Amino acid sequence: MSVFQAIKNILKHIFPPPTKSFMREMNDLRGHLFAIQEALTRIQEENKDLSKELASIREENKVLSKELASIREENKVLSKELASIREENKVLSKELASIREENKGLSKELASIREENIGMSTTLTSIREESKSLSNELPIIRKENKVLRDELGKVGTEVWNSSWDNYGPGHWTQNNVYLSSIPEERYPEELCKWYYQKTGEILNLTNPRTFNEKIQWMKLYDSTELKTRLADKYLVRDWVKEKIGEEYLVPLLGVWDRFDDINFDEFPDRFALKANHGSGWNIIVKDKSQFDREDARKKFNLWLHTNFAFYGLELHYMNIPPKIIAEQYIENVEGLKDYRFYCFNGKPTQVWVDIFSGTPNHLRSVYDMEWNQLPLKCTWPDGGELLREKPKTFEKMKEFAELLSQDFAFVRVDFFDVDGKLYMGEMTFTPMDGTGKFEPAQWNVEMGDALILPPKNPIPERIL
Image (cartoon, rainbow, N blue to C red; front, side, top):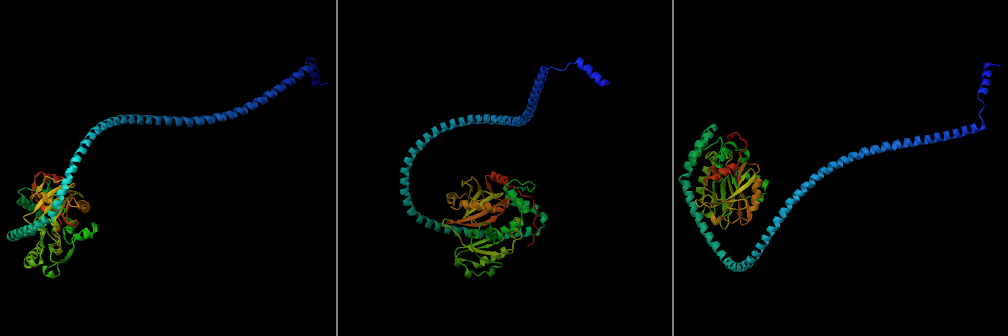
């Protein structure tokens, strides 16, 4: 017998075999253990699913936390806006209460106005009856006024021509010859002398302040090629045609280089002759049968051989080729009124209304852009009632003046209203040669403040 077998026999005596009852209990215990193990496995699987759901819920909570923080910030902003709105409502409530009080006062005034209107209606009926009577008399008065104005114009023209013949050519030509002979570096010095002779005032070209002073500065340092083109009474027509249309130009009868080339037999009975390269060099012919051709020849021969720039160093006239132009004669029953818009930096601010220009009977009134007369006189007497009526084309004039003045620090744009027909007159860059006599003098300063000088340009070179 082996040792192993001996040990096995000994163990049988020490540990007897289990009983049937013990085996049954062991089997039952194994069954319970298997059941517990299966339940534990199921619980572990469920825990895995729950862990995944918990992780998902945590991610959702993070998103919700961010959204909640954003909503809280929005609520803060809305709270501030709400507080602001409440303050505004308080102000509006006060204004509403004030308006209600004002409305009570206005209601009383309205009732009073209605009572006044009843009385005015009665007065208006009476005025209408008087107007019917005056309307019958008005054509007769207009005819009488036309006769008187024609006579006044003839007398004024005779006086003007007489003064021109007596002192104009000699004085002006002497000054013109002198200024045209000096070198351009002396222009500033000579302009200061000329200005003092004209006004009795010292010209400050270094720091000009008044309107007149700034016009003198611009004569020297802003005489551009465009200004030369537009000061030319012939070339300006093409520019105006491009900007606002040919229908606003006074019809042209012709253009010539010499007076003797003009065939007056082809002219209508009334017309206007003008030198294109100056200012005031015009002859208005109302009756061709009374036209003194020899006198006109002398004047135009003088004008065509004179450089207008050197009367007062208006250098934008210096390089205009001289010509004679003829235009259609235009007039009004009450007299031809010239509407001169003073434009600063592309904006018209004043309109100077002139009548009987070029004669000793010259009258002038000044208005703002709402047709309120300004307390301003300059060189000529106020026109009073004669210049009080606003033309029907005034708004169109303002529109065109603004359009035509866009490229300039200052320009005067002139128009005529001929019985409701609008004509453009001319572009003027140095009105009154910068020597206007302002009354009161403060207007010279205020208009100078409105004129913002452009960059300084070189004095232009003379080519004619």
